[in-house]
Length: 163
Image 1: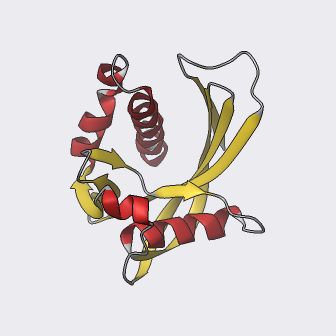
Image 2: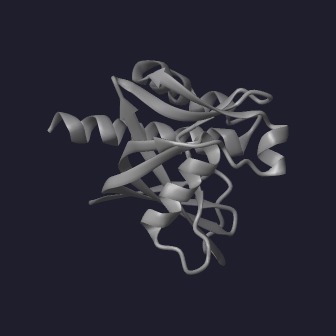
């Protein structure tokens, strides 16, 4: 499994905090499942933080269900991404998943306020959006960083499935 490191422009020389999360690449009929924040027009591969006593696979399933309403089965862990911003090290485990059911979303109050909705999009459409990560450098380092992460992950996925 490949491991990639990304150093944010604002990273410290050493990190003192670590946050672990999981994200799922879910593709059906050539379309990618994404989470979109309608208020901010922010597009992401669904996923989020690992909870206490939770396995990585359980985290992936829970986060995708909460954000999108889709129940997935992680088929393969294919990528680990280490990102460094300020004093944080963010570790994201990416899984290739398949849909096995559907329920309602379980959004936090914050996610509701941001208008988080699931969307099935063409892969080139998503690649185009997140490939523009550097455009956000002067205005929003968090968005720049998340788009760089997602761009790197989707390109790795596309390289993996072509092999």
